Length: 353
Ligand code: ADP
Ligand code: MG
Image (cartoon, rainbow, N blue to C red; front, top):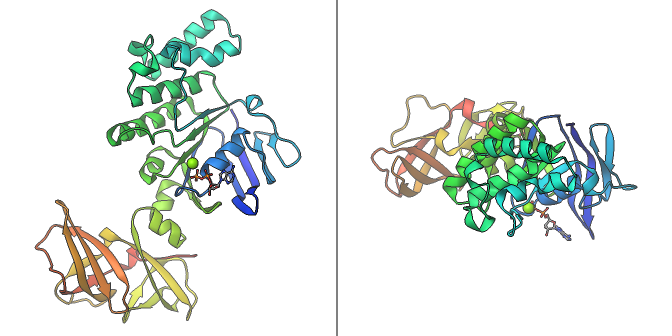
């Protein structure tokens, strides 16, 4: 096992840089998620790491080995990596057991060693009862587990997963997230996990690299990314934040829609534009003016939806900004009502970018 390091990695198709000067270090045994919307360059990055693509610029190192550069790219089979694709790509004419040991047979491993490893992996992936079935006789989740077992049994230095759960239905997807993390804790292969689903990234990752248009917008632990977004893109993409635009009165005060907001996060430049993120459930909505007028914005309700445990409001501030607010279910505040919004200073995060 070893670390994986991307240095200034760039892939252009024609004029377009699909992966644009990406640098990222994944420590030995770590699971890093590349998280971003469709088309942001996740799969291309993974294919570069696997060796299916050659970089236009930059390099990839595994441990102290240079595996990709402009000058020389090691073919996939010499990288000691296992990749799991969106489609599981199991052999339909082989049983579960035969599918799993296929890679070991290719490597001409001794029979008794293969049998021992197979038993071990069947146990950890809970596939023992299914070992003699064919892929066509399995559910989607079971097939996914076979694909995982097949990737793990060869003891790769690096495990690459490209949206491995996207073909499963919602319940199973949730269960398999925990399963993948459990297997990772057991085997500790250095892992790059690609997904567009933020809950999937939050559940599985040690570190999340949020990608946008070919670049890593922010790298951090799930807590960092969620609690301390640095850009508007991350604030909106992760965990449903409103982003309001005002102007900085000083390092931590923003003028917005006729109100003054004290904020936390990045230090602002006086007189310049400021973007502030605040989550939908962190805003308090009231039909009466609060006693304490600090961080209070006046607004009008434009929509109200009952969601069972919560109510989902859309409101408009004096400057035309729309904010979404999720509150506990109380008496509904009808459309057209004038309301006062309290935005707690500790929840207003000024964005660095
Ligand atoms: P993601 O996996 O994040 O959805 P991809 O890495 O698959 O994104 O693709 C990123 C962008 O690169 C997309 O706009 C896609 O159309 C483009 N792209 C991917 N492969 C090629 C290719 N072989 N030739 C030209 N454009 C490509
Ligand atoms: Mg993709």
